[in-house]
Length: 269
Image 1 (cartoon, rainbow, N blue to C red):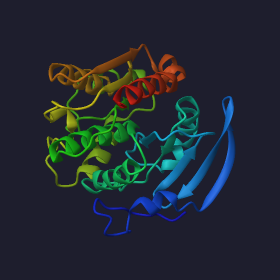
Image 2 (image 1 turned 60 degrees about the vertical axis):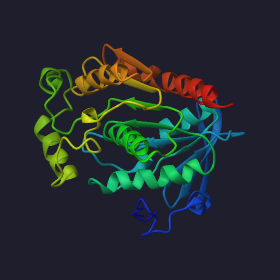
Image 3 (image 1 turned 90 degrees about the horizontal axis):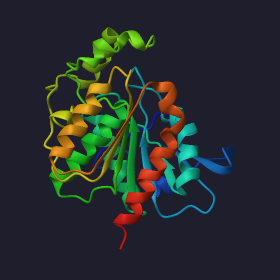
């Protein structure tokens, strides 16, 4: 697959409903207790479980370098698809703001044309999911049924105390490297821009949100602060903090699936 870029209006690629149907390759793969179909599309991998429902989960990948390809999320997407019965779309997005947000917004619009949508993401992807919620709310557009934010990077000012306090508990974490990647991603934008750092946004009117994080995660404070501000704003919040990543990861897909299924059902007439 080439490095396809998308834009919020679809002007660069003609993004629309047809893009999610333009499947270029299919692979049947085993995952947990069933089989899923992993499809290659212009926007990124699409994972379809057997007898898929009309629910679509838009899963936004992310890693420590604020980069990586959406293929890195396929394993989790397979398990999430099997547990929810939903089609899971793992889109590509650009490596800078605001292009990344424009890209996921465009794919969200395509997903929405097919049925109810839930958002999910990890690290930068979780931050983009939260930013998309804020943008949709401000536009008066239809929001997703719910969102799940895992180990979310929600504040690119990088002022959270946990970034330093928990650094020693995570050997793979490098605060200087994160600052470098964050500066590159933000470009010249104000780091407190609520669409770049949704922790600084007005959170009133957002759909139900689940936050999953480990107590030893350097990004812990982002989730704690966001959960508190969202709850004070009247948002339904499910905050789950586990002692460490070892205890969080085995249950994360189950927690995501249960939350998404509960709120997707509740939102239907």
